[in-house]
Length: 205
Image (cartoon, rainbow, N blue to C red):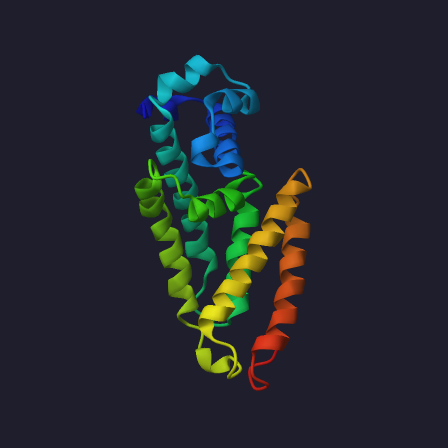
């Protein structure tokens, strides 16, 4: 990447970042093309190649930018007094929704990075997503598994919640423009239902 990218006006930087992030988030690394990014961002193709030599370099920058920006916000929002599993994950998604007001495809980009399978970029993806997953997992360590019903394992809970969030997220984007309020409302409703199912009576809220 050409460091002079940051000499551009912030508005143009964000147009290019959002254009690239949208295409990578929706199509994944392999199917993403700079032609699509040019159309979304409304900038010339020459400008892309002036600042980013190839697709791998662009993806690395976008993935890194996405996680660093999100983690800065999470560092503020994930306070140490939160120890409920669903409350912690709600704050994570709430933070993504807040960041999406500037970078609309951050929630889906994080998911795309978690789902990425292309061998060409897989190591880059893993290294860039790790700081995010570590921050979330660190917060979740404050939750005691003793609050779960005997028949509910933590692994089952993680998988169930993960698939639920993925479904809600994909629906939010399939409806067109990402609506953070509807997104968070759907998550809250599902989380309240799940609490009643997976918590012991003592832990029920």
